[in-house]
Image 1 (cartoon, rainbow, N blue to C red):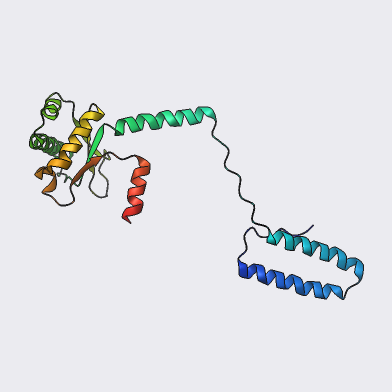
Image 2: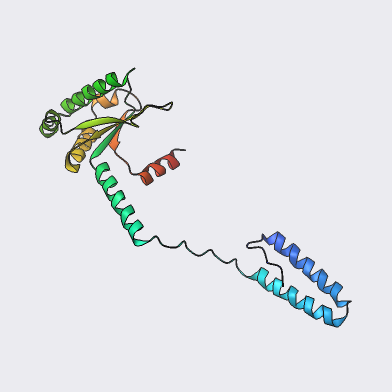
Length: 196
């Protein structure tokens, strides 16, 4: 049984193996005919295998239908929630969680007043604009983001549009502060990949 050929040898390694095979052919010519033919045939098979392209791995088996549908439904609900949120990056935190929450509420109120939009002010007074820090528990890491949740996507889009066009000083007075939409996991991976 001939030995298995490596999957993808480099050109230099392949040339070295071919030279070795040719030198073995010459040595085998000195042996009796019956052994030489069998060994020569095996070596020719090895040579042919070396010249072939490596066999590609088959694609992974598809998920079963239930798992695929469940994953799609989970993703859809997550994306629907993210479509109603904005993220305030770089907003400083206070010494305690209670002070941070109060400070965040005050900053959002100032921001909505500065944007001077009746629909946003009405949504804020009716309690339709909520906020929380992400992640919920502060760890030993950089600043936590302030996530601002709206009741619908239209209000969120209006909020972001007004911030882009008005450039309110509540956001722009501190370097590194900006407001953006809430990104999906794959978008966050792209941002991290391109920021390195």
